[in-house]
Length: 300
Length: 273
Image 1 (cartoon, chains in turn red, green):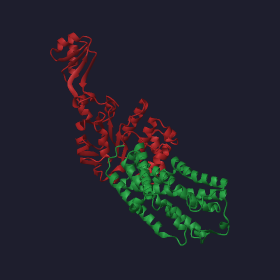
Image 2 (cartoon, one colour):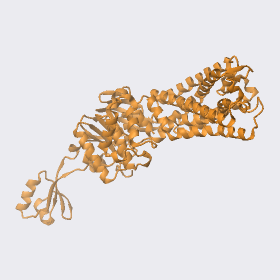
Image 3 (cartoon, one colour):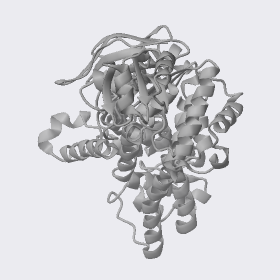
Image 4 (cartoon, one colour):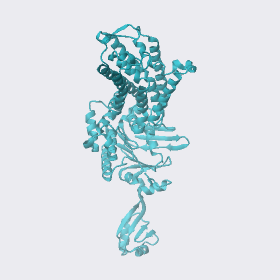
């Protein structure tokens, strides 16, 4: 759905994006991670044809961008760096205007499309109020509604949960998962690891303009071959396991053993009580920390 | 896209506030004239003003002559300067472009909406001035006789007057296109709507100043404000076409140059707002 090769953008002396090879496949919920200033937004803008690449290619829905923007963009819904609307108009009037722009969609079904989009994001009640009076969360919903107007095949969302309260974030997540289940591919840029971890099937990590990781989330989180053991008898456990304990932290032991079931049997057999036992998995945070120079999301 | 730009223009409160303010000065002038009965001597002050005391139906032309040199360009420069820079500042520009609206299309739609704004403003000024003129200054004896005296001393019938007033309205609107195109170009170059508007106004101030300077004689025919007031030539008998035609051609050249510059600049610009 999105494929870039050697995508590079230079702003004067600053290399903002450096030789990016993105690969977002149909049906993905792709999490695009990176610290602020790592080049996420510039990349998103290049994909959409707002910023022109210094070198490299962008392919969107199989078509070269920005040359085929007119063909491709009607099937793409976007939310780039926060929502924007005409403040003196109502939410509904804004959607009608956005829907009319570009001329890809007919006028006949406009009312229905607008109503539907308002309903999906839960904004019907405020639809006829001026956007000037909207809260940030309502503006975000309106932005998402305008992205969904023309039933896109691909959603490109830049920090979509910005400004939403926990309830709103949860609703947004459920909405995105539902859309994905209906076949919409989602490309989501974020600096919030937890958000990406809960939502995405594939991740790409950007560090100072370079893509340092691109893999399925499940692969990144594959078991490490170690098992975490919590026991009220740590000393006894260390005796039984004899050299396989990599780290001891109070009652919590990190054991080199790929199969927790076998380990459990062995411990119980030796009379060591087990409180918790689980294979160790790397969190996304560990992956990102290992592959980048700094902690993403240290500020927002 | 042109339709959506027109809808945006018409639904903006600012459009109507601007037009209302444009009408304030001519109305004030009419009130002062009606109260004091002191008209400027013929040949002095804004064109037509000396005549309106005897015939209120001429006031639309006087009103156009009042707003044209300064107020109208300010309104147009503000409106056109906002066209792209304002959307960029509000953040809507990126969403407009990804709908997608082609950049050239957007520029043309913006220029059309500016032209529509100018026409609307000029027509409203003329209509309001007609009402105000008839109400406050009364219909002159000439109007009741079905004719008024043109600049050349011969009589113009009412039908001719209406026709020529319409032509004057169109001419005044066209005169604003040069400023509009310049402000539009600056609007694509700057992210500040105010900066673009002031830039365009600075250009006009310079043009007006150079017009008064004998040493700038050679530049005169190319200055955008040179033929602005030539619309009075439409009321001579026969119509003195020379300056009118030159005025229209000159505005056309300014539009071509600045729209071209706007296109060249905006077509390949990184939209980072």
